[in-house]
Image (cartoon, rainbow, N blue to C red):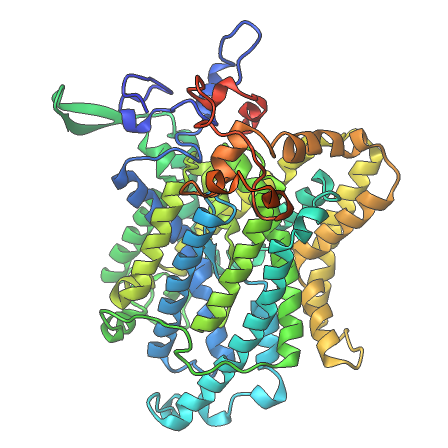
Length: 608
Protein backbone atom coordinates (compact mmCIF):
# COMPACT_ATOMS: atom_id res chain seq x y z
CA UNK A 1 0.00 0.00 0.00
CA UNK A 2 1.40 3.33 -0.99
CA UNK A 3 2.08 5.68 1.89
CA UNK A 4 1.16 8.72 -0.14
CA UNK A 5 -2.31 7.45 -0.96
CA UNK A 6 -5.07 9.17 1.00
CA UNK A 7 -8.40 7.56 1.69
CA UNK A 8 -11.20 8.45 4.04
CA UNK A 9 -9.00 11.13 5.55
CA UNK A 10 -6.53 8.69 7.03
CA UNK A 11 -3.01 10.05 7.22
CA UNK A 12 -1.22 6.88 8.25
CA UNK A 13 -0.33 4.60 5.35
CA UNK A 14 -1.29 1.64 7.51
CA UNK A 15 -4.91 2.68 7.37
CA UNK A 16 -5.12 3.64 3.70
CA UNK A 17 -7.23 1.78 1.19
CA UNK A 18 -5.05 0.14 -1.43
CA UNK A 19 -7.64 0.10 -4.20
CA UNK A 20 -8.34 -3.58 -4.48
CA UNK A 21 -11.76 -5.01 -3.68
CA UNK A 22 -13.49 -2.23 -1.78
CA UNK A 23 -12.94 0.69 -4.13
CA UNK A 24 -15.94 2.89 -4.65
CA UNK A 25 -17.88 2.45 -7.82
CA UNK A 26 -17.18 5.14 -10.38
CA UNK A 27 -19.94 6.91 -12.19
CA UNK A 28 -19.91 7.52 -15.93
CA UNK A 29 -17.87 10.70 -15.52
CA UNK A 30 -15.22 8.90 -13.52
CA UNK A 31 -15.91 10.57 -10.19
CA UNK A 32 -16.52 8.80 -6.94
CA UNK A 33 -20.01 8.21 -5.68
CA UNK A 34 -21.29 10.28 -2.78
CA UNK A 35 -19.35 11.33 0.27
CA UNK A 36 -21.68 9.10 2.29
CA UNK A 37 -20.57 6.05 0.29
CA UNK A 38 -16.98 7.12 0.88
CA UNK A 39 -17.56 6.96 4.61
CA UNK A 40 -18.86 3.40 4.36
CA UNK A 41 -15.79 1.99 2.62
CA UNK A 42 -13.85 -0.78 4.27
CA UNK A 43 -10.67 0.20 6.07
CA UNK A 44 -9.08 -3.09 4.97
CA UNK A 45 -10.34 -5.58 2.42
CA UNK A 46 -9.93 -9.34 2.37
CA UNK A 47 -6.48 -9.45 0.73
CA UNK A 48 -5.05 -6.43 2.53
CA UNK A 49 -2.40 -6.87 5.21
CA UNK A 50 -2.70 -4.42 8.10
CA UNK A 51 0.34 -3.69 10.30
CA UNK A 52 1.26 -6.51 12.66
CA UNK A 53 0.19 -4.62 15.77
CA UNK A 54 -3.22 -3.88 14.27
CA UNK A 55 -3.63 -7.53 13.30
CA UNK A 56 -3.00 -8.51 16.93
CA UNK A 57 -5.41 -5.93 18.32
CA UNK A 58 -8.17 -6.83 15.86
CA UNK A 59 -7.43 -10.52 16.35
CA UNK A 60 -8.02 -10.07 20.07
CA UNK A 61 -11.30 -8.36 19.25
CA UNK A 62 -12.43 -11.33 17.16
CA UNK A 63 -11.40 -13.72 19.93
CA UNK A 64 -13.44 -11.71 22.40
CA UNK A 65 -16.37 -11.68 19.99
CA UNK A 66 -16.31 -15.48 19.68
CA UNK A 67 -15.40 -16.05 23.31
CA UNK A 68 -18.96 -16.14 24.61
CA UNK A 69 -20.01 -18.87 22.19
CA UNK A 70 -16.80 -20.89 22.52
CA UNK A 71 -16.70 -21.02 26.30
CA UNK A 72 -20.44 -21.60 26.66
CA UNK A 73 -20.28 -24.97 24.89
CA UNK A 74 -17.95 -26.84 27.29
CA UNK A 75 -19.74 -25.29 30.26
CA UNK A 76 -23.09 -26.58 28.99
CA UNK A 77 -21.61 -29.97 28.07
CA UNK A 78 -20.16 -30.32 31.56
CA UNK A 79 -23.68 -30.98 32.87
CA UNK A 80 -24.16 -34.00 30.62
CA UNK A 81 -20.59 -35.15 31.26
CA UNK A 82 -21.12 -35.10 35.06
CA UNK A 83 -18.52 -32.34 35.48
CA UNK A 84 -20.61 -29.74 37.30
CA UNK A 85 -18.34 -29.84 40.34
CA UNK A 86 -14.98 -30.26 38.60
CA UNK A 87 -13.96 -26.75 37.52
CA UNK A 88 -10.39 -27.78 36.73
CA UNK A 89 -11.53 -30.31 34.10
CA UNK A 90 -13.91 -27.72 32.74
CA UNK A 91 -10.89 -25.48 32.32
CA UNK A 92 -9.10 -28.26 30.40
CA UNK A 93 -12.10 -28.57 28.07
CA UNK A 94 -12.11 -24.81 27.50
CA UNK A 95 -8.39 -24.84 26.69
CA UNK A 96 -8.90 -27.74 24.28
CA UNK A 97 -11.73 -26.04 22.39
CA UNK A 98 -9.65 -22.84 22.19
CA UNK A 99 -6.73 -24.76 20.74
CA UNK A 100 -8.80 -26.69 18.18
CA UNK A 101 -10.74 -23.57 17.18
CA UNK A 102 -7.45 -21.83 16.43
CA UNK A 103 -6.13 -24.73 14.36
CA UNK A 104 -9.38 -25.00 12.39
CA UNK A 105 -9.42 -21.24 11.81
CA UNK A 106 -5.95 -21.36 10.28
CA UNK A 107 -6.93 -24.30 8.08
CA UNK A 108 -10.12 -22.59 6.90
CA UNK A 109 -8.56 -19.21 6.14
CA UNK A 110 -5.47 -20.70 4.49
CA UNK A 111 -6.78 -23.71 2.58
CA UNK A 112 -10.59 -23.61 2.93
CA UNK A 113 -12.95 -20.84 1.90
CA UNK A 114 -10.06 -18.35 2.39
CA UNK A 115 -12.37 -15.65 3.73
CA UNK A 116 -11.91 -13.85 7.07
CA UNK A 117 -14.18 -16.20 8.98
CA UNK A 118 -13.42 -17.57 12.43
CA UNK A 119 -14.03 -21.21 13.34
CA UNK A 120 -15.30 -22.34 16.72
CA UNK A 121 -17.62 -24.68 18.54
CA UNK A 122 -21.09 -25.12 17.07
CA UNK A 123 -24.40 -25.04 18.89
CA UNK A 124 -25.95 -27.20 16.16
CA UNK A 125 -24.04 -30.19 17.55
CA UNK A 126 -24.79 -29.27 21.15
CA UNK A 127 -28.44 -30.34 21.00
CA UNK A 128 -27.80 -33.87 19.67
CA UNK A 129 -24.87 -34.22 22.06
CA UNK A 130 -27.01 -33.38 25.08
CA UNK A 131 -29.77 -35.65 23.74
CA UNK A 132 -27.28 -38.50 23.51
CA UNK A 133 -25.94 -37.87 27.02
CA UNK A 134 -29.49 -37.84 28.40
CA UNK A 135 -30.08 -41.43 27.30
CA UNK A 136 -30.56 -43.90 30.21
CA UNK A 137 -27.16 -45.57 29.84
CA UNK A 138 -25.39 -42.21 30.09
CA UNK A 139 -27.38 -40.65 32.92
CA UNK A 140 -25.01 -39.24 35.55
CA UNK A 141 -24.82 -41.23 38.82
CA UNK A 142 -26.52 -39.49 41.72
CA UNK A 143 -23.29 -39.15 43.69
CA UNK A 144 -21.71 -37.00 40.94
CA UNK A 145 -24.35 -34.35 41.61
CA UNK A 146 -23.16 -33.88 45.19
CA UNK A 147 -20.06 -31.71 45.42
CA UNK A 148 -19.05 -33.21 48.77
CA UNK A 149 -18.94 -36.72 47.28
CA UNK A 150 -16.95 -35.86 44.15
CA UNK A 151 -13.24 -36.60 44.17
CA UNK A 152 -12.00 -35.26 40.85
CA UNK A 153 -8.84 -37.38 40.97
CA UNK A 154 -10.44 -40.74 41.77
CA UNK A 155 -10.27 -43.34 38.97
CA UNK A 156 -13.97 -44.06 39.33
CA UNK A 157 -14.99 -40.45 38.75
CA UNK A 158 -12.52 -40.00 35.90
CA UNK A 159 -13.97 -43.02 34.14
CA UNK A 160 -17.52 -41.70 34.61
CA UNK A 161 -16.95 -38.53 32.60
CA UNK A 162 -14.28 -39.83 30.22
CA UNK A 163 -16.46 -42.75 29.07
CA UNK A 164 -19.17 -40.27 28.11
CA UNK A 165 -16.69 -38.02 26.36
CA UNK A 166 -15.24 -40.93 24.38
CA UNK A 167 -18.72 -41.93 23.15
CA UNK A 168 -19.35 -38.33 22.16
CA UNK A 169 -15.99 -38.12 20.37
CA UNK A 170 -16.66 -41.21 18.25
CA UNK A 171 -20.11 -40.00 17.17
CA UNK A 172 -18.73 -36.61 16.16
CA UNK A 173 -15.83 -38.12 14.21
CA UNK A 174 -18.09 -40.48 12.23
CA UNK A 175 -20.68 -37.77 11.60
CA UNK A 176 -18.01 -35.34 10.40
CA UNK A 177 -16.98 -37.76 7.64
CA UNK A 178 -20.33 -37.04 5.98
CA UNK A 179 -19.52 -33.32 5.87
CA UNK A 180 -16.06 -34.06 4.47
CA UNK A 181 -17.64 -36.18 1.73
CA UNK A 182 -20.29 -33.60 0.83
CA UNK A 183 -17.74 -30.80 0.68
CA UNK A 184 -14.86 -32.35 -1.23
CA UNK A 185 -17.14 -34.29 -3.60
CA UNK A 186 -18.79 -31.08 -4.77
CA UNK A 187 -22.33 -31.97 -3.72
CA UNK A 188 -22.67 -28.62 -1.95
CA UNK A 189 -21.64 -26.94 -5.18
CA UNK A 190 -24.40 -28.80 -7.02
CA UNK A 191 -26.93 -27.77 -4.39
CA UNK A 192 -25.97 -24.13 -4.99
CA UNK A 193 -27.58 -24.30 -8.41
CA UNK A 194 -30.92 -24.41 -6.65
CA UNK A 195 -30.11 -22.02 -3.81
CA UNK A 196 -30.95 -18.40 -4.47
CA UNK A 197 -31.54 -15.24 -2.44
CA UNK A 198 -34.91 -16.49 -1.15
CA UNK A 199 -33.09 -19.44 0.44
CA UNK A 200 -30.01 -17.61 1.69
CA UNK A 201 -31.91 -14.61 3.13
CA UNK A 202 -34.03 -16.49 5.70
CA UNK A 203 -31.15 -18.84 6.54
CA UNK A 204 -28.77 -16.02 7.44
CA UNK A 205 -31.42 -13.86 9.10
CA UNK A 206 -32.61 -16.69 11.31
CA UNK A 207 -29.05 -17.31 12.46
CA UNK A 208 -29.21 -13.98 14.23
CA UNK A 209 -32.90 -14.00 15.17
CA UNK A 210 -32.77 -17.52 16.63
CA UNK A 211 -30.08 -16.40 19.06
CA UNK A 212 -32.31 -13.81 20.71
CA UNK A 213 -32.78 -16.08 23.71
CA UNK A 214 -29.03 -16.45 24.24
CA UNK A 215 -28.56 -12.69 24.01
CA UNK A 216 -31.49 -12.06 26.34
CA UNK A 217 -30.37 -14.62 28.92
CA UNK A 218 -26.87 -13.12 29.11
CA UNK A 219 -28.02 -9.53 29.03
CA UNK A 220 -30.79 -10.20 31.54
CA UNK A 221 -28.31 -10.98 34.29
CA UNK A 222 -27.87 -7.22 34.62
CA UNK A 223 -29.68 -5.05 32.10
CA UNK A 224 -27.83 -1.96 33.22
CA UNK A 225 -24.41 -3.41 32.41
CA UNK A 226 -25.57 -4.99 29.15
CA UNK A 227 -27.30 -1.78 28.06
CA UNK A 228 -24.13 0.16 28.80
CA UNK A 229 -22.10 -2.30 26.71
CA UNK A 230 -24.53 -2.07 23.80
CA UNK A 231 -24.65 1.73 24.02
CA UNK A 232 -20.85 1.95 24.00
CA UNK A 233 -20.52 -0.30 20.94
CA UNK A 234 -23.22 1.69 19.12
CA UNK A 235 -21.57 4.96 20.13
CA UNK A 236 -18.16 3.88 18.91
CA UNK A 237 -19.25 2.06 15.73
CA UNK A 238 -21.92 4.46 14.49
CA UNK A 239 -21.68 7.92 16.03
CA UNK A 240 -17.92 8.28 16.51
CA UNK A 241 -16.66 6.15 13.63
CA UNK A 242 -15.82 9.17 11.42
CA UNK A 243 -14.03 11.07 14.18
CA UNK A 244 -10.24 10.60 14.04
CA UNK A 245 -8.18 10.42 17.21
CA UNK A 246 -4.63 11.84 17.11
CA UNK A 247 -1.95 9.36 18.14
CA UNK A 248 1.76 10.11 18.54
CA UNK A 249 3.83 8.27 15.94
CA UNK A 250 7.42 8.30 14.78
CA UNK A 251 8.93 7.97 11.32
CA UNK A 252 12.35 8.64 9.84
CA UNK A 253 11.03 11.40 7.61
CA UNK A 254 8.60 13.22 9.91
CA UNK A 255 10.25 12.23 13.18
CA UNK A 256 7.86 12.50 16.13
CA UNK A 257 4.43 13.67 15.01
CA UNK A 258 0.75 12.96 15.46
CA UNK A 259 -1.34 10.82 13.12
CA UNK A 260 -5.11 10.72 13.00
CA UNK A 261 -6.46 7.21 13.29
CA UNK A 262 -10.12 6.20 13.11
CA UNK A 263 -9.85 4.09 16.24
CA UNK A 264 -13.59 4.02 16.92
CA UNK A 265 -14.32 2.60 13.47
CA UNK A 266 -11.69 -0.12 13.77
CA UNK A 267 -12.08 -1.23 17.40
CA UNK A 268 -15.65 -0.50 18.52
CA UNK A 269 -16.38 -3.95 19.95
CA UNK A 270 -13.06 -4.28 21.76
CA UNK A 271 -13.36 -0.78 23.21
CA UNK A 272 -16.94 -1.38 24.31
CA UNK A 273 -16.19 -4.72 25.97
CA UNK A 274 -12.99 -3.48 27.64
CA UNK A 275 -14.62 -0.35 29.06
CA UNK A 276 -17.63 -2.30 30.35
CA UNK A 277 -15.33 -4.97 31.79
CA UNK A 278 -13.34 -2.29 33.60
CA UNK A 279 -16.47 -0.69 35.03
CA UNK A 280 -17.66 -4.10 36.27
CA UNK A 281 -14.29 -4.59 37.94
CA UNK A 282 -14.58 -1.21 39.68
CA UNK A 283 -18.12 -2.04 40.79
CA UNK A 284 -16.88 -5.40 42.10
CA UNK A 285 -14.01 -4.13 44.26
CA UNK A 286 -16.18 -1.31 45.59
CA UNK A 287 -19.01 -3.74 46.44
CA UNK A 288 -21.54 -1.89 44.32
CA UNK A 289 -22.60 -5.21 42.82
CA UNK A 290 -24.29 -7.73 45.15
CA UNK A 291 -22.13 -10.44 46.68
CA UNK A 292 -24.89 -12.99 47.31
CA UNK A 293 -25.41 -15.57 44.50
CA UNK A 294 -29.19 -15.26 44.58
CA UNK A 295 -29.31 -11.51 44.14
CA UNK A 296 -29.95 -9.75 40.84
CA UNK A 297 -26.72 -8.50 39.27
CA UNK A 298 -24.46 -11.00 41.02
CA UNK A 299 -23.27 -12.41 37.66
CA UNK A 300 -21.94 -9.00 36.68
CA UNK A 301 -19.08 -9.40 39.16
CA UNK A 302 -15.59 -10.09 37.82
CA UNK A 303 -14.40 -12.24 40.75
CA UNK A 304 -16.77 -15.19 40.33
CA UNK A 305 -14.18 -17.48 38.72
CA UNK A 306 -11.04 -16.40 40.50
CA UNK A 307 -10.34 -19.97 41.63
CA UNK A 308 -10.10 -21.08 38.01
CA UNK A 309 -7.17 -18.72 37.44
CA UNK A 310 -5.35 -20.11 40.47
CA UNK A 311 -5.95 -23.75 39.57
CA UNK A 312 -5.23 -23.47 35.85
CA UNK A 313 -1.74 -24.64 34.80
CA UNK A 314 0.58 -22.24 33.05
CA UNK A 315 1.17 -24.61 30.12
CA UNK A 316 -0.84 -27.59 28.90
CA UNK A 317 -0.65 -29.11 25.42
CA UNK A 318 -3.93 -30.72 24.25
CA UNK A 319 -3.46 -33.80 22.07
CA UNK A 320 -5.69 -36.28 20.16
CA UNK A 321 -7.11 -39.05 22.29
CA UNK A 322 -6.26 -37.31 25.56
CA UNK A 323 -9.42 -38.78 27.13
CA UNK A 324 -8.87 -42.27 25.72
CA UNK A 325 -9.85 -44.20 22.58
CA UNK A 326 -13.16 -42.88 21.14
CA UNK A 327 -16.15 -45.22 20.91
CA UNK A 328 -19.07 -45.06 18.47
CA UNK A 329 -22.78 -44.90 19.24
CA UNK A 330 -25.31 -45.34 16.41
CA UNK A 331 -27.85 -43.09 18.11
CA UNK A 332 -25.20 -40.45 18.60
CA UNK A 333 -24.06 -40.60 14.98
CA UNK A 334 -27.61 -40.14 13.65
CA UNK A 335 -28.16 -37.15 15.90
CA UNK A 336 -24.81 -35.62 14.99
CA UNK A 337 -25.65 -36.00 11.28
CA UNK A 338 -28.71 -33.82 11.78
CA UNK A 339 -26.55 -31.18 13.41
CA UNK A 340 -23.97 -31.43 10.61
CA UNK A 341 -26.65 -30.80 7.97
CA UNK A 342 -27.82 -27.69 9.79
CA UNK A 343 -24.24 -26.53 10.22
CA UNK A 344 -23.52 -26.85 6.49
CA UNK A 345 -26.59 -24.80 5.56
CA UNK A 346 -25.61 -22.16 8.08
CA UNK A 347 -22.03 -22.07 6.82
CA UNK A 348 -22.98 -21.58 3.17
CA UNK A 349 -24.98 -18.54 4.26
CA UNK A 350 -22.07 -17.33 6.38
CA UNK A 351 -19.70 -17.56 3.41
CA UNK A 352 -21.86 -15.26 1.32
CA UNK A 353 -22.38 -12.84 4.21
CA UNK A 354 -18.67 -12.82 4.98
CA UNK A 355 -17.73 -12.17 1.34
CA UNK A 356 -20.22 -9.32 1.22
CA UNK A 357 -19.01 -7.69 4.43
CA UNK A 358 -15.28 -8.16 3.71
CA UNK A 359 -15.30 -6.66 0.22
CA UNK A 360 -14.57 -9.96 -1.52
CA UNK A 361 -16.20 -11.35 -4.66
CA UNK A 362 -18.96 -13.88 -3.96
CA UNK A 363 -17.44 -17.32 -3.29
CA UNK A 364 -17.29 -19.62 -6.33
CA UNK A 365 -18.34 -23.25 -6.15
CA UNK A 366 -14.86 -24.69 -5.68
CA UNK A 367 -14.25 -22.40 -2.70
CA UNK A 368 -17.56 -23.35 -1.08
CA UNK A 369 -16.71 -27.04 -1.63
CA UNK A 370 -13.35 -26.56 0.08
CA UNK A 371 -14.90 -24.54 2.88
CA UNK A 372 -17.45 -27.22 3.73
CA UNK A 373 -14.84 -29.96 3.38
CA UNK A 374 -12.40 -28.17 5.69
CA UNK A 375 -15.18 -27.61 8.22
CA UNK A 376 -15.85 -31.33 8.15
CA UNK A 377 -12.14 -31.93 8.69
CA UNK A 378 -12.30 -29.46 11.56
CA UNK A 379 -15.13 -31.42 13.16
CA UNK A 380 -13.02 -34.56 12.76
CA UNK A 381 -10.11 -32.89 14.53
CA UNK A 382 -12.39 -31.54 17.26
CA UNK A 383 -13.71 -35.04 17.85
CA UNK A 384 -10.21 -36.51 17.95
CA UNK A 385 -8.95 -33.87 20.38
CA UNK A 386 -11.98 -34.33 22.61
CA UNK A 387 -13.73 -30.96 22.71
CA UNK A 388 -17.09 -32.73 22.92
CA UNK A 389 -18.18 -30.61 19.96
CA UNK A 390 -17.39 -29.81 16.34
CA UNK A 391 -16.45 -26.60 14.55
CA UNK A 392 -18.34 -24.21 12.31
CA UNK A 393 -18.11 -20.69 10.95
CA UNK A 394 -18.92 -18.10 13.59
CA UNK A 395 -21.79 -15.85 12.58
CA UNK A 396 -21.07 -13.27 15.27
CA UNK A 397 -17.61 -12.68 13.83
CA UNK A 398 -19.14 -12.17 10.41
CA UNK A 399 -21.25 -9.48 12.03
CA UNK A 400 -18.11 -7.91 13.51
CA UNK A 401 -16.78 -7.37 9.97
CA UNK A 402 -19.72 -5.12 9.17
CA UNK A 403 -19.14 -3.02 12.28
CA UNK A 404 -15.34 -2.69 12.27
CA UNK A 405 -15.05 -2.23 8.48
CA UNK A 406 -11.92 -4.42 8.60
CA UNK A 407 -12.23 -7.47 6.34
CA UNK A 408 -8.60 -8.62 6.15
CA UNK A 409 -8.10 -12.34 6.54
CA UNK A 410 -4.71 -11.68 8.14
CA UNK A 411 -6.65 -10.39 11.15
CA UNK A 412 -8.48 -13.73 11.42
CA UNK A 413 -5.19 -15.59 11.06
CA UNK A 414 -3.87 -13.56 13.98
CA UNK A 415 -7.05 -14.44 15.88
CA UNK A 416 -6.49 -18.13 15.15
CA UNK A 417 -2.92 -17.96 16.47
CA UNK A 418 -4.17 -16.20 19.61
CA UNK A 419 -6.75 -18.93 20.15
CA UNK A 420 -4.00 -21.55 19.93
CA UNK A 421 -1.92 -19.59 22.45
CA UNK A 422 -4.87 -19.37 24.82
CA UNK A 423 -5.32 -23.11 24.46
CA UNK A 424 -1.67 -23.75 25.31
CA UNK A 425 -1.39 -21.32 28.21
CA UNK A 426 -4.14 -22.10 30.64
CA UNK A 427 -3.68 -18.93 32.68
CA UNK A 428 -4.38 -16.72 29.67
CA UNK A 429 -7.59 -18.49 28.84
CA UNK A 430 -8.64 -18.45 32.50
CA UNK A 431 -8.36 -14.66 32.64
CA UNK A 432 -11.01 -14.29 29.95
CA UNK A 433 -13.44 -16.30 32.03
CA UNK A 434 -13.85 -13.25 34.26
CA UNK A 435 -15.75 -11.34 31.55
CA UNK A 436 -19.20 -10.86 33.09
CA UNK A 437 -22.08 -12.48 31.22
CA UNK A 438 -24.04 -9.17 30.97
CA UNK A 439 -21.14 -7.69 29.00
CA UNK A 440 -21.25 -10.65 26.61
CA UNK A 441 -25.03 -10.27 26.33
CA UNK A 442 -24.72 -6.59 25.43
CA UNK A 443 -22.27 -7.47 22.67
CA UNK A 444 -24.64 -10.17 21.34
CA UNK A 445 -27.46 -7.63 21.02
CA UNK A 446 -25.41 -5.73 18.45
CA UNK A 447 -23.76 -8.66 16.67
CA UNK A 448 -26.85 -10.78 16.10
CA UNK A 449 -28.75 -7.77 14.80
CA UNK A 450 -26.08 -7.16 12.18
CA UNK A 451 -26.22 -10.81 11.09
CA UNK A 452 -30.00 -10.66 10.68
CA UNK A 453 -29.74 -7.50 8.58
CA UNK A 454 -26.99 -9.04 6.42
CA UNK A 455 -29.38 -11.86 5.58
CA UNK A 456 -32.20 -9.53 4.59
CA UNK A 457 -29.82 -7.58 2.33
CA UNK A 458 -29.63 -10.57 -0.02
CA UNK A 459 -33.21 -9.83 -1.07
CA UNK A 460 -31.92 -6.96 -3.20
CA UNK A 461 -31.41 -9.48 -6.00
CA UNK A 462 -35.04 -10.66 -5.99
CA UNK A 463 -38.14 -8.74 -7.04
CA UNK A 464 -39.68 -7.87 -3.69
CA UNK A 465 -42.65 -6.24 -5.41
CA UNK A 466 -43.73 -9.78 -6.28
CA UNK A 467 -46.38 -11.25 -3.99
CA UNK A 468 -44.82 -14.66 -4.62
CA UNK A 469 -41.47 -13.61 -3.15
CA UNK A 470 -43.06 -11.76 -0.25
CA UNK A 471 -45.02 -14.89 0.66
CA UNK A 472 -41.97 -17.18 0.44
CA UNK A 473 -39.74 -14.96 2.55
CA UNK A 474 -42.41 -14.12 5.11
CA UNK A 475 -43.59 -17.71 5.54
CA UNK A 476 -40.01 -19.03 5.76
CA UNK A 477 -39.04 -16.50 8.39
CA UNK A 478 -42.17 -16.96 10.48
CA UNK A 479 -42.03 -20.77 10.29
CA UNK A 480 -38.37 -20.68 11.28
CA UNK A 481 -39.38 -18.96 14.52
CA UNK A 482 -42.68 -20.69 15.30
CA UNK A 483 -41.87 -24.37 14.72
CA UNK A 484 -38.64 -24.54 16.78
CA UNK A 485 -40.29 -22.58 19.59
CA UNK A 486 -43.21 -25.03 19.71
CA UNK A 487 -40.93 -28.08 19.64
CA UNK A 488 -38.88 -26.65 22.50
CA UNK A 489 -42.04 -26.21 24.56
CA UNK A 490 -43.37 -29.66 23.61
CA UNK A 491 -40.31 -31.94 23.55
CA UNK A 492 -42.44 -35.09 23.84
CA UNK A 493 -44.54 -34.29 20.77
CA UNK A 494 -42.18 -36.23 18.48
CA UNK A 495 -42.62 -39.91 19.24
CA UNK A 496 -42.22 -42.14 16.21
CA UNK A 497 -41.14 -45.14 18.26
CA UNK A 498 -37.63 -45.00 16.81
CA UNK A 499 -35.27 -43.19 19.15
CA UNK A 500 -32.76 -42.30 16.45
CA UNK A 501 -35.48 -40.86 14.20
CA UNK A 502 -36.92 -38.91 17.11
CA UNK A 503 -33.52 -37.38 17.80
CA UNK A 504 -33.05 -36.55 14.13
CA UNK A 505 -36.41 -34.78 13.85
CA UNK A 506 -35.89 -33.08 17.20
CA UNK A 507 -32.63 -31.51 16.09
CA UNK A 508 -33.84 -30.53 12.62
CA UNK A 509 -37.10 -28.99 13.79
CA UNK A 510 -35.49 -27.05 16.62
CA UNK A 511 -32.90 -25.44 14.33
CA UNK A 512 -34.39 -22.18 13.09
CA UNK A 513 -32.02 -21.65 10.20
CA UNK A 514 -32.71 -25.18 8.93
CA UNK A 515 -36.49 -24.79 9.11
CA UNK A 516 -36.49 -21.36 7.45
CA UNK A 517 -33.88 -22.34 4.87
CA UNK A 518 -35.75 -25.54 4.02
CA UNK A 519 -39.05 -23.77 3.43
CA UNK A 520 -37.31 -21.05 1.44
CA UNK A 521 -35.53 -23.65 -0.68
CA UNK A 522 -38.61 -25.83 -1.23
CA UNK A 523 -41.07 -23.03 -2.01
CA UNK A 524 -38.68 -21.08 -4.21
CA UNK A 525 -38.00 -24.15 -6.35
CA UNK A 526 -41.62 -25.35 -6.59
CA UNK A 527 -43.80 -22.23 -6.82
CA UNK A 528 -43.83 -21.01 -10.44
CA UNK A 529 -41.83 -17.87 -11.06
CA UNK A 530 -39.39 -16.50 -13.59
CA UNK A 531 -35.68 -16.59 -12.88
CA UNK A 532 -35.62 -12.82 -12.99
CA UNK A 533 -38.46 -12.60 -10.48
CA UNK A 534 -36.80 -15.10 -8.16
CA UNK A 535 -33.49 -13.23 -8.35
CA UNK A 536 -31.77 -16.27 -9.83
CA UNK A 537 -30.60 -14.34 -12.91
CA UNK A 538 -28.86 -11.63 -10.91
CA UNK A 539 -27.76 -14.14 -8.25
CA UNK A 540 -26.12 -16.49 -10.77
CA UNK A 541 -24.49 -13.63 -12.62
CA UNK A 542 -22.77 -12.44 -9.46
CA UNK A 543 -22.42 -15.60 -7.37
CA UNK A 544 -21.69 -18.24 -9.97
CA UNK A 545 -20.69 -17.14 -13.46
CA UNK A 546 -18.62 -13.99 -13.00
CA UNK A 547 -17.00 -15.08 -9.76
CA UNK A 548 -15.61 -18.33 -11.07
CA UNK A 549 -13.06 -17.00 -13.55
CA UNK A 550 -12.05 -13.45 -12.69
CA UNK A 551 -8.90 -11.86 -11.42
CA UNK A 552 -10.72 -10.80 -8.25
CA UNK A 553 -11.97 -14.30 -7.50
CA UNK A 554 -8.63 -15.99 -8.15
CA UNK A 555 -6.86 -13.46 -5.96
CA UNK A 556 -9.11 -14.31 -3.02
CA UNK A 557 -10.10 -17.96 -3.44
CA UNK A 558 -7.21 -19.70 -5.20
CA UNK A 559 -5.02 -21.97 -3.10
CA UNK A 560 -2.03 -20.29 -1.40
CA UNK A 561 1.73 -20.70 -1.84
CA UNK A 562 1.40 -20.99 -5.63
CA UNK A 563 -0.41 -24.34 -5.40
CA UNK A 564 -3.04 -23.26 -7.93
CA UNK A 565 -0.36 -22.15 -10.41
CA UNK A 566 1.46 -25.46 -10.06
CA UNK A 567 -1.73 -27.42 -10.71
CA UNK A 568 -2.97 -25.23 -13.56
CA UNK A 569 -0.99 -27.17 -16.18
CA UNK A 570 -2.80 -30.42 -15.41
CA UNK A 571 -6.06 -31.14 -17.25
CA UNK A 572 -7.45 -33.36 -14.48
CA UNK A 573 -7.81 -30.33 -12.21
CA UNK A 574 -11.09 -29.39 -13.87
CA UNK A 575 -12.61 -32.66 -12.63
CA UNK A 576 -11.71 -32.04 -8.97
CA UNK A 577 -14.65 -30.16 -7.38
CA UNK A 578 -12.63 -28.35 -4.71
CA UNK A 579 -9.82 -27.07 -6.96
CA UNK A 580 -10.07 -23.77 -8.88
CA UNK A 581 -10.27 -23.82 -12.65
CA UNK A 582 -7.44 -22.46 -14.74
CA UNK A 583 -8.37 -18.87 -14.04
CA UNK A 584 -6.13 -15.92 -14.78
CA UNK A 585 -4.30 -14.34 -11.91
CA UNK A 586 -2.92 -10.86 -11.47
CA UNK A 587 0.58 -12.29 -11.56
CA UNK A 588 -0.03 -14.01 -14.89
CA UNK A 589 -1.23 -10.86 -16.69
CA UNK A 590 1.44 -8.24 -17.35
CA UNK A 591 0.34 -4.66 -17.18
CA UNK A 592 -2.39 -5.28 -14.61
CA UNK A 593 -1.41 -3.27 -11.58
CA UNK A 594 -4.56 -3.75 -9.59
CA UNK A 595 -7.81 -5.59 -9.79
CA UNK A 596 -9.79 -2.44 -10.36
CA UNK A 597 -8.86 -2.58 -14.03
CA UNK A 598 -10.62 -5.90 -14.50
CA UNK A 599 -14.22 -6.99 -14.03
CA UNK A 600 -15.83 -4.28 -11.86
CA UNK A 601 -18.85 -6.23 -10.70
CA UNK A 602 -17.63 -6.56 -7.16
CA UNK A 603 -17.14 -2.83 -6.60
CA UNK A 604 -20.72 -2.55 -5.42
CA UNK A 605 -20.61 -5.40 -2.95
CA UNK A 606 -20.05 -3.26 0.14
CA UNK A 607 -22.67 -0.55 0.03
CA UNK A 608 -25.10 0.38 2.72
